[in-house]
Image (cartoon, rainbow, N blue to C red; front, side, top):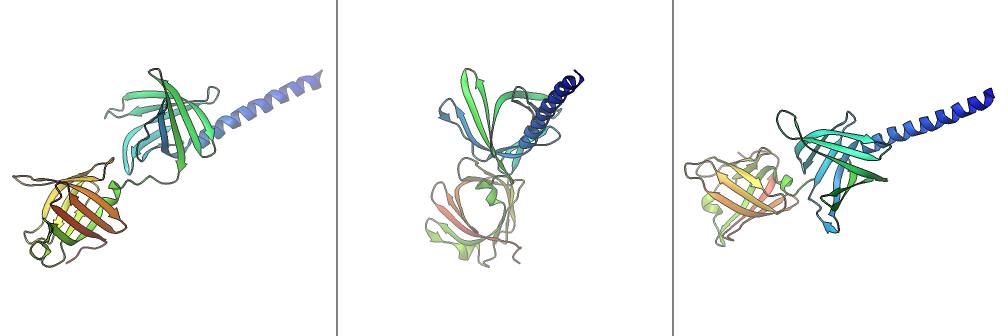
Length: 243
């Protein structure tokens, strides 16, 4: 009789231990950085560009797009229900703005989150990665020197860049500086569109002028083509200021 009781206790202990180990393992799987690989509402593809979420071991989470973090919050996983709850805080006082719960399916380095959204089936596939995704817009940051300046198909570098050392510095806080121009340094702000390769720039001035460019980056080369097709700027990335 005693041996039977011992056996039953042992079986329950093993089951409990396995369940606890599975719960720990699932938490460990979720911990880390995940790229939003696919988003579908019913059969419609709604996948964003370079969105990510990072689940931390202390149950906090952050999310963003490219190199930009825009949301903080927390997360929890219920092993029995296989349910992941994500809370997002955006306001300055830390209040919870919204909360979502998803059914979770694990598949190697992927997890699939599913729930109904206003009667529609929402499915989000996350892929574990080891670094933040890079948008084309993120590659704009840095120091560039002007190789050529075309206005109405005419090369005007001799007048605008006579010393051949004019530079454009695009900073992470979205400010820019023009160096070594005949008219001296010029400052302004810029905005790069995440969905389209478009750059908007406006100078600091009593009469600010807005400029709009399509941009293309190929290795260390940057091409800016104004949306009115009147100005084409060719630049090369450099790692130090020119005198």
